[in-house]
Image (cartoon, rainbow, N blue to C red; front, side, top):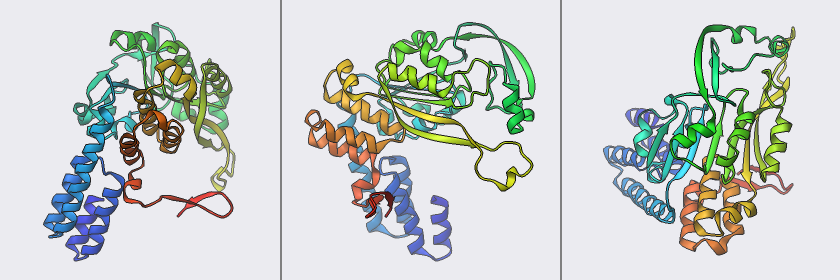
Amino acid sequence: MIGLSVVSFQQGDLPNAVNYISAIVLENPFDSDLLGTCSALLRSFSVEEFADRVEAISDDAKKDARTITACLNGFLNMADFGSSGEAIVRVPSEIASAIHFISLDALSVGSNRSKFGRYSPINCVIAPTAGDYEFREKHFIYASSLLEDKQEVLEAFGLRDLARVKAVHKVKAKRMSDALDEIGVSGLDYFKSDLEGIDGLVLRDARQHIAGAAVVQAELRFMPAYEGEPHFDETVAYMRGQDFEVLHLTNENWRYATRHRDHMARGRTVFADTVFVKNIDTYLSLQGRSTEAVVRYCLACGVSGNANYAEFILEKHKELVPCDLVAALVNYLIPKARFGQPQFAKTRLGHVAMS
């Protein structure tokens, strides 16, 4: 969008150029580097008053970030195993400095790793049990390299070509729990996995490490594609037994390999990116009914994209969080709230719709 702003200015359309920058500021008030770029660009457009306003917004956001991080004793332990870490990487520097980012995917951080308070790469293959494995490198990288494919599923959806093996490597795999122990992490605040078929198994192995987590996010299948892969229902039942609740599902729909499938939109919901939250009462009994516990919980919800639920928790437990901290968290979790521009409005039918 920065580029679009520059192009608009070069074409003599200053109002549109400024509008693009306004949109950036509305969405990213905590990204001081980005706002610095916006401010400099506005000054090059000779829009000094708006540039001053952007710098003031950035200063306010830094103050809010200091208010939030000041109540934390120790890092927020946030781990991403296999899903590129994008959600954690997007956390602005002022908050990221309070995060210990544990990443299985070396490509997930890139040049951003320096903004985290601590960064720990996991440079090994993770499996449900430790030992020797055949790691099948496939042409389609988003397929399991450890588990055998269910041939009937590949045939049903026409996915045989995606499962073709390019190379086979002998590897030694570690359990997730062992890998975390080796870097001195006994518990997580937020955990996200996309381990192609073994997510449900890994959650069971790492029971002690996620017991006190606020949020756990995993890809779970309604139609298992690999031999030995747990069904969605099994993992949800297991997590429910650990006092985790399903908060949100992002479903993936596949179409069967039928003659006219290109003419149809709906096939079968095969998996869901599933967000679990620890029951808040259980969480507070484990972590202590404290300001810090509520803040950790809300920050983890924010990383998972569930700011609405985080705000609900803030309002429900407002007696634990000072007003200035509530305001800072709301500004961070819901950027547009700072500017008084609601993103959603209730219709007369009670549904939620874009305003």
